[in-house]
Image (cartoon, rainbow, N blue to C red; front, top):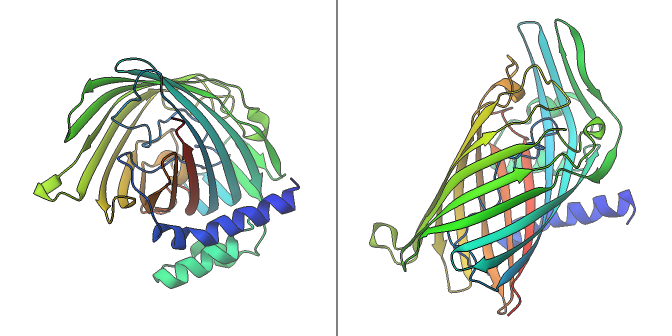
Length: 334
């Protein structure tokens, strides 16, 4: 598919998000909340969709997620300056399988595109509807691509050409700690491998290891249709190729979410996520903790397919991509 054709498909998917949120969905897992930033998204921070219920032995699940994140940030302080203007699209393919009772393993393969901001007009319209400021985006022409970071030592990152390719692959596993009709808890592990080209911002160049806890609870506050989820992870960051003298060795990620079953097939979700800083830096996109809000819905199509759609906003401005639209399709063969 040509770059133009893919961009059109991506825009159509983004426009469809609000309609899909009101469509038909239901599943206990939380929504994806991957950070798709050009200098932060290639680290091995676990996604909240890795849930608290692992697959039964012999069963499997295939998944495909399309995530389009629009960047619009400018920050200058203490001799540092960062400009993030453009768009990053992530096509994430996953496969997981239960290999024994209480244990599943999986693999995640991302394909990334860094491009000019094709979603700029849509994002501005989205923010106008919500009554939010357009900020830095309204001060520049649409369709720019510039990822630039400078400090007292000079230019550290200067990226301005479209790029695409395989990102950093990730292996993950889940071990069921507790399972019941109302509460599931799983221990989660992950290893992110340096398979992406760091010169094209497709990977970090390092190996990251994560361990965490995932929990899902139904019948919250004795409301049968209300559920909640929680995730907490620690990530050991391997030395990256870029900004290797600034990266944090250990990063934390916490997410909390609520889900409401509108019907047996439809579930609406709202969740927030916090991630500690990935770098030692004064500019906010690198050196500040990230706080995001994701809202959307899931609906089951037949017995084997589940579709979800969501939007993520940077509640703490400039701490994450300005806005991200996602569509996910999961398939569970019987």
